[in-house]
Amino acid sequence: MNAEQKAATTFNATFVRPVKFYLSGFTDIPHVKYFYVFLCFVYIMTVLGNGLLLSVIYLDKTLHTPKYMTVFNLALTDLCGSTALIPKALDIFLFDRRYIVYETCLSYMFFVLFFGCVQSWTLVIMAYDRFIAICFPLRYHSIVNKPAITAVLLFVWVFVLSVIACMVGLIDRLYFCGSLEIQSFFCDHGPTFRLACNDTSLNYIMGLFVVAIVVCIPLVLISLTYICIAIALSRIASGQERLKPLKTCTTHLFLVAIFFLPVLGTNLTATISSIHPNARIINSALTHTIPALLNPFIYTLKTEEVLTSIRRLCKANRLM
Image 1 (cartoon, rainbow, N blue to C red):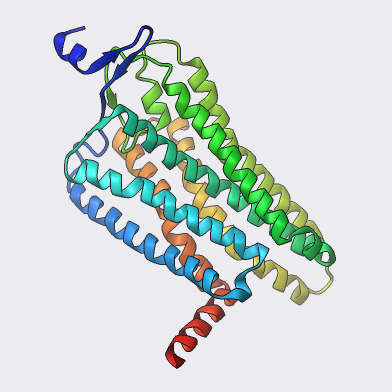
Image 2: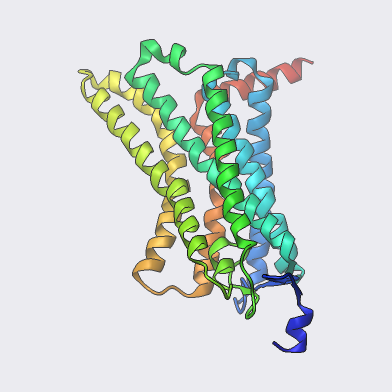
């Protein structure tokens, strides 16, 4: 280890912990500053869209229902996730501050992954809400009530917090004696732990476990709920009677598609064929940011209850 590397690390009895990592994302991309401007626009619109949806749900008491508690939770995690990711990414790359302190890097990793995981499980809860509403309509209000949804949401936050904290905490057991260059646009888990010099098998297993609970299990559960919904709707004789409950599912299916399809597409492409690092990084950046931008607008434009609430609130403000 040369003098520069020694200066860049602090020694503990077992670990070699870097003072800083270097984020090498968005390197050698032509006109990359336009992409940074685009990310800035995405963040502003994400804040406005999710802020509007949160405000409408909070101000209109008719939306204080279990269904809209989950919508509120999704908008909140979209807003927090984008705030955790985009401003820091812009600060790093737009102002060329690519060196990031070790502790800051782990915090960055934790919050981005934490809010992404909560978003995933919120979509599962929303699918469960639709499943009960369509398959057990007479028992809906006794099963899906405020205490039950509060308990489920609280469990998701605590469970995800524990899992992501454990995964990020395992990074702290590694030592880094070689490259400190993270090939990503944020302190992503995989590109970070692969830089370590000691055994990373536990980190790899934990990474697979998190992928399973963020992508695989939620997708399976959502698919099962919609299979049950399809079976229930197939038993309804009239096509017109099928249409109304089906419409209540379309918004949620849009949200599921824009959250999971980019993740699956990026990972499948990387698995099946080689993908240029810059293409992977840009795809990953869009995957992390675009769903949070689109969710509130899809929900606002495709949900009559929300549109009615917005009109009611605007009318009340004009009268005041």
